Figure 1 (cartoon, rainbow, N blue to C red):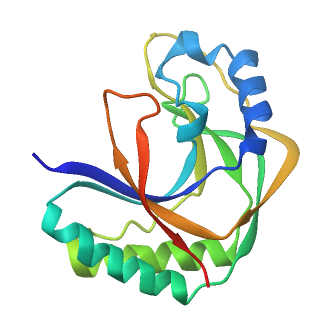
Figure 2 (figure 1 turned 90 degrees about the vertical axis):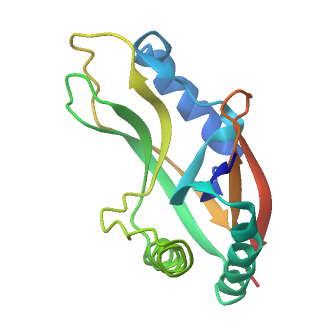
Figure 3 (figure 1 turned 30 degrees about the vertical axis):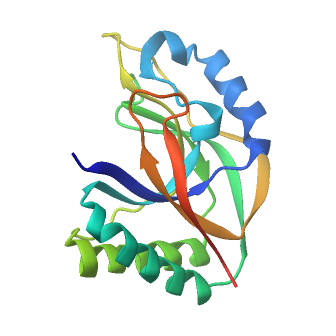
Length: 180
Protein backbone atom coordinates (compact mmCIF):
# COMPACT_ATOMS: atom_id res chain seq x y z
CA UNK A 1 0.00 0.00 0.00
CA UNK A 2 1.27 3.46 -0.92
CA UNK A 3 1.18 6.35 1.52
CA UNK A 4 -0.58 9.55 0.45
CA UNK A 5 1.31 12.83 0.38
CA UNK A 6 1.04 16.55 -0.28
CA UNK A 7 3.46 19.45 -0.38
CA UNK A 8 2.58 22.43 1.78
CA UNK A 9 3.45 25.28 4.10
CA UNK A 10 2.58 24.83 7.77
CA UNK A 11 0.33 27.59 9.10
CA UNK A 12 1.75 29.71 11.93
CA UNK A 13 0.65 29.14 15.54
CA UNK A 14 -0.62 32.75 15.51
CA UNK A 15 -3.60 31.64 13.39
CA UNK A 16 -5.07 29.61 16.26
CA UNK A 17 -7.14 32.43 17.81
CA UNK A 18 -8.83 33.65 14.60
CA UNK A 19 -9.55 30.04 13.59
CA UNK A 20 -11.18 29.31 16.96
CA UNK A 21 -13.17 32.54 16.74
CA UNK A 22 -14.67 31.63 13.33
CA UNK A 23 -15.25 27.99 14.22
CA UNK A 24 -17.19 29.09 17.30
CA UNK A 25 -19.00 31.99 15.60
CA UNK A 26 -20.40 29.76 12.84
CA UNK A 27 -20.67 26.52 14.86
CA UNK A 28 -18.55 24.78 12.24
CA UNK A 29 -18.07 21.59 14.29
CA UNK A 30 -21.85 21.08 14.19
CA UNK A 31 -22.02 21.52 10.41
CA UNK A 32 -18.83 19.87 9.10
CA UNK A 33 -17.43 16.36 9.48
CA UNK A 34 -13.80 17.44 9.19
CA UNK A 35 -12.45 20.12 11.52
CA UNK A 36 -8.65 19.97 11.06
CA UNK A 37 -6.49 19.79 14.18
CA UNK A 38 -4.62 23.06 14.78
CA UNK A 39 -1.32 21.24 14.08
CA UNK A 40 -2.67 20.20 10.65
CA UNK A 41 -3.44 23.73 9.41
CA UNK A 42 -1.47 24.45 6.23
CA UNK A 43 -1.41 25.94 2.75
CA UNK A 44 -1.33 23.18 0.14
CA UNK A 45 1.11 23.78 -2.71
CA UNK A 46 0.44 20.41 -4.41
CA UNK A 47 -1.75 17.43 -3.51
CA UNK A 48 0.02 14.26 -4.62
CA UNK A 49 -2.12 11.39 -3.33
CA UNK A 50 -0.74 7.84 -3.39
CA UNK A 51 2.99 7.77 -4.05
CA UNK A 52 5.14 4.66 -4.56
CA UNK A 53 8.03 4.59 -2.05
CA UNK A 54 10.66 4.53 -4.83
CA UNK A 55 9.45 7.95 -6.03
CA UNK A 56 9.73 9.65 -2.61
CA UNK A 57 13.51 10.13 -2.55
CA UNK A 58 13.84 11.55 -6.11
CA UNK A 59 10.94 13.89 -5.33
CA UNK A 60 12.67 15.03 -2.13
CA UNK A 61 15.89 15.71 -4.06
CA UNK A 62 14.03 17.90 -6.57
CA UNK A 63 12.19 19.76 -3.80
CA UNK A 64 15.47 20.38 -1.94
CA UNK A 65 17.00 21.87 -5.10
CA UNK A 66 13.91 24.04 -5.54
CA UNK A 67 14.11 25.29 -1.94
CA UNK A 68 17.79 26.19 -2.47
CA UNK A 69 16.70 28.62 -5.19
CA UNK A 70 14.02 30.40 -3.15
CA UNK A 71 14.20 33.05 -0.47
CA UNK A 72 12.10 33.65 2.60
CA UNK A 73 8.97 35.75 2.09
CA UNK A 74 6.10 37.19 4.08
CA UNK A 75 2.45 36.14 3.86
CA UNK A 76 -0.62 37.56 5.56
CA UNK A 77 -3.77 35.74 6.56
CA UNK A 78 -6.55 38.28 6.12
CA UNK A 79 -10.00 36.77 6.56
CA UNK A 80 -12.58 34.03 6.31
CA UNK A 81 -13.81 32.67 3.00
CA UNK A 82 -15.17 29.49 1.42
CA UNK A 83 -15.53 27.30 -1.65
CA UNK A 84 -19.08 26.57 -2.77
CA UNK A 85 -22.41 28.23 -2.08
CA UNK A 86 -22.60 30.97 0.58
CA UNK A 87 -25.76 29.20 1.83
CA UNK A 88 -23.76 26.10 2.69
CA UNK A 89 -20.14 26.07 1.56
CA UNK A 90 -18.35 22.75 1.06
CA UNK A 91 -15.04 24.15 2.44
CA UNK A 92 -14.49 27.01 4.90
CA UNK A 93 -11.02 28.52 5.04
CA UNK A 94 -8.79 31.35 6.21
CA UNK A 95 -7.80 33.44 3.19
CA UNK A 96 -4.27 34.51 2.36
CA UNK A 97 -3.41 37.84 0.72
CA UNK A 98 -2.11 37.50 -2.85
CA UNK A 99 1.65 36.97 -3.05
CA UNK A 100 3.84 36.78 -6.15
CA UNK A 101 6.42 34.80 -4.16
CA UNK A 102 3.84 32.23 -3.10
CA UNK A 103 2.45 31.94 -6.63
CA UNK A 104 5.96 31.42 -8.06
CA UNK A 105 6.73 28.75 -5.45
CA UNK A 106 3.46 26.93 -6.11
CA UNK A 107 4.07 26.97 -9.88
CA UNK A 108 7.59 25.59 -9.40
CA UNK A 109 6.28 22.82 -7.12
CA UNK A 110 3.52 22.03 -9.64
CA UNK A 111 6.12 21.78 -12.42
CA UNK A 112 8.04 19.18 -10.39
CA UNK A 113 4.77 17.30 -9.81
CA UNK A 114 4.06 17.33 -13.53
CA UNK A 115 7.59 16.29 -14.56
CA UNK A 116 8.22 13.58 -11.96
CA UNK A 117 4.77 12.34 -11.01
CA UNK A 118 2.61 13.10 -14.04
CA UNK A 119 0.26 15.31 -11.99
CA UNK A 120 -1.59 17.71 -14.27
CA UNK A 121 -1.04 21.31 -13.12
CA UNK A 122 -4.15 23.01 -11.72
CA UNK A 123 -4.29 26.65 -12.74
CA UNK A 124 -6.93 27.47 -10.13
CA UNK A 125 -4.50 27.80 -7.20
CA UNK A 126 -6.22 29.69 -4.39
CA UNK A 127 -3.91 29.88 -1.38
CA UNK A 128 -5.97 29.05 1.70
CA UNK A 129 -5.95 27.31 5.09
CA UNK A 130 -8.91 24.93 5.42
CA UNK A 131 -10.64 25.12 8.82
CA UNK A 132 -13.74 23.00 8.02
CA UNK A 133 -14.84 20.68 5.22
CA UNK A 134 -17.26 17.89 4.26
CA UNK A 135 -20.70 19.04 5.34
CA UNK A 136 -22.62 16.69 7.62
CA UNK A 137 -25.94 18.53 7.60
CA UNK A 138 -28.36 19.41 4.81
CA UNK A 139 -30.06 22.75 4.52
CA UNK A 140 -28.70 26.24 4.75
CA UNK A 141 -25.76 27.15 6.98
CA UNK A 142 -24.75 30.56 5.67
CA UNK A 143 -21.20 31.77 6.02
CA UNK A 144 -20.13 35.37 5.42
CA UNK A 145 -16.84 36.24 3.78
CA UNK A 146 -15.08 38.43 6.33
CA UNK A 147 -11.83 40.25 6.79
CA UNK A 148 -9.99 39.84 10.07
CA UNK A 149 -7.12 41.54 11.78
CA UNK A 150 -4.22 40.63 9.50
CA UNK A 151 -2.02 37.78 10.73
CA UNK A 152 1.39 38.23 9.09
CA UNK A 153 3.87 35.37 9.09
CA UNK A 154 7.23 34.48 7.64
CA UNK A 155 7.60 31.59 5.18
CA UNK A 156 11.09 30.13 5.37
CA UNK A 157 10.44 26.83 3.60
CA UNK A 158 7.90 24.12 2.89
CA UNK A 159 7.41 20.43 3.65
CA UNK A 160 6.49 17.08 2.17
CA UNK A 161 3.64 15.77 4.34
CA UNK A 162 2.47 12.16 4.70
CA UNK A 163 -1.23 11.73 5.42
CA UNK A 164 -2.29 9.41 8.27
CA UNK A 165 -6.10 9.25 7.96
CA UNK A 166 -6.65 7.41 11.25
CA UNK A 167 -4.44 9.66 13.43
CA UNK A 168 -4.83 13.09 14.97
CA UNK A 169 -3.02 15.19 13.90
CA UNK A 170 -3.27 13.58 10.44
CA UNK A 171 -0.32 15.19 8.69
CA UNK A 172 3.32 14.33 9.33
CA UNK A 173 6.08 16.47 7.84
CA UNK A 174 8.39 13.69 6.59
CA UNK A 175 10.87 16.18 5.12
CA UNK A 176 11.27 19.94 5.53
CA UNK A 177 12.77 22.07 2.77
CA UNK A 178 14.18 25.29 4.22
CA UNK A 179 14.96 28.16 1.88
CA UNK A 180 18.62 29.15 1.60
